Amino acid sequence: MAIHKRKTIPQKGSKILCQDDVQYRWIAYATQKGTEVRIVYNEAIDGQMLIAQVPKVFDLRWLEEIIDYGHNNGWQPTIAADMLVIRKSKDSYRIITDE
Image (tube, rainbow, N blue to C red; front, side, top):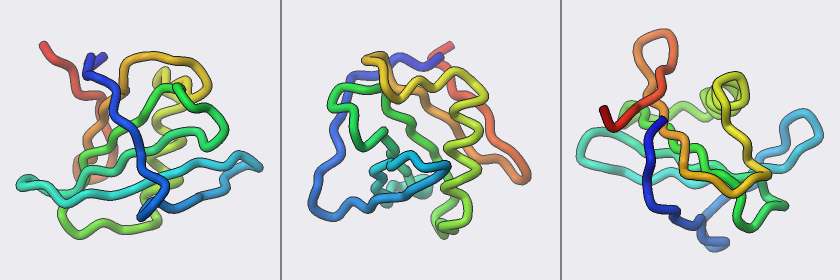
């Protein structure tokens, strides 16, 4: 899994998403290569962050897919850990590693 220095999600400008009775805080940033979506568990201050690299035109419907993919591939938002970074391909996602 990718190892990256922990970043925080600001309260201002971020949004809340409730999925399966769990609240997540998320924010999207424009980058040179597309959009970077950062997601954390809203109740855990130092929980693991999920970062998704997606196309420049971000579709809000992808948020639930990103969260589900993260959970199915080792994302533990309630535990302090290095960020999990994934990238959207045409029809799926894949984990980005430093290798």
